[in-house]
Image (cartoon, rainbow, N blue to C red; front, side):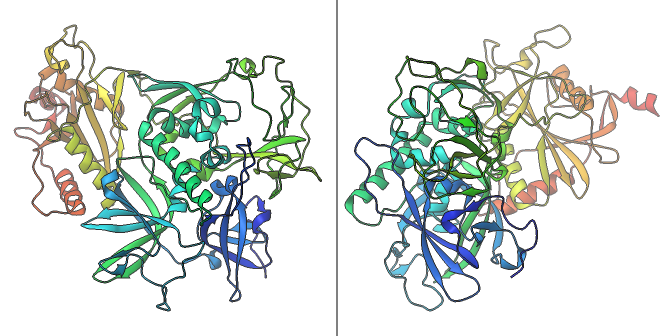
Length: 609
């Protein structure tokens, strides 16, 4: 068998190293084990079913839970390496939908659960219901169009995608560390009104995992789900029955989600079995995250995870390992694997500006001595298994995404931004309705949508960046610039750039005053329907402030045309897709406003002519 060069992953998983070509058919229960008294770092492993793609054969292996961030259902494995060789990949459909993760829309059920005396998940092609074994665990049903199980996800996939962002956090869900996050993961967490979060990280938490940990630090709902995962699993493990994982996502909002799936037929219904989630555009809890390292005097517990005693820490080798062993590390050094696929899961989290601690300020919790760095040893074999082993050298390996700087989404010439105070309360007849329709437009149409921030001051509504009007215009503190009686909350405007069939149209939505209906939605475009510079968009926004209403007549941009959209209710029984298509059509066919349709005074048109 010849495998194309570059088709194999960078690291070999020793626990999956079987001869031939295999596919991960299922993640089952965790292997039976008994925790050591007083040792929270128990070695928990998943039972993984592998199917041979070259002959009718299957095997069950045990994989350390810390390797979960690198693995996924249906992955093709060749001698322990994840293979991207096209000819071996399963034939799956790709979907991209706005899913509702509200608790009331979710159902957790077992593989053999029924609805109206019919299996929710139909039997295999043989027609025989599966045996109740270590691989018939829990699934998550997501409701859609009246079917509470319209989309079905294995619980292990929910765990992998939403929770397994690093080896250390994945282990924390099983070893009990999650029950006391302040002692084991982070502490002194704080979230300011301007969207800036801060927290101190415990020393075994990687900087690159901070942005994902912030979801659990600042969301009680997310932390509750993480703790529930551990508690439910612990009860099942103690009972002697298969210890399956069951968990719901740590978010409770609608979010655009991309996934691979198989279509399954049930009596009267067609459902989607999601085998792998690719990305979820859920909003991060903060826009800026300041992190520090532990400096409190809390003494370290005994080094049950194999770290060196007396305050010493293992030297770090920057070279990633070639192999992940299924044995514990021997403690000579540490290394790390940074997987970019982890960061691709949550695109919005890449926009969080993470400002890490200064390494010179790191202090050990031990009050006896400061940490001293041991010389690193280049070791090609690593391990995420807790504890300390013997034998040949095996480095302690950390798995995470990469600590990236915030992506600069500004266009050239944009002004540096400052956060401003606004009233971000929802308005279902104003900006909230527009944001919802734009989200559906991204999911259900061929149009692309991005948001332009061109004024000096900004804020966010949910995860949408908005322009905030200045406190004064032309030296005057106009009432129109504010939305409250005390003139403390400034008015904001959303500018969405909509690209469809190589044509650019721009939607401007002004924040309406509470309890008042006004014209608030404008569509504008250039004469050639091309890209519009930020400086021109800023002039158009200020035109509304100058005139104290939704109009672009003071925009001083005779090359730009504009029209209005009137807010309207969607027809009864119209689907989200139909609403998105209808809204896109209204945007791209909007007519110039009477009398001249230009973003300028009539005199400026004459001068330009």
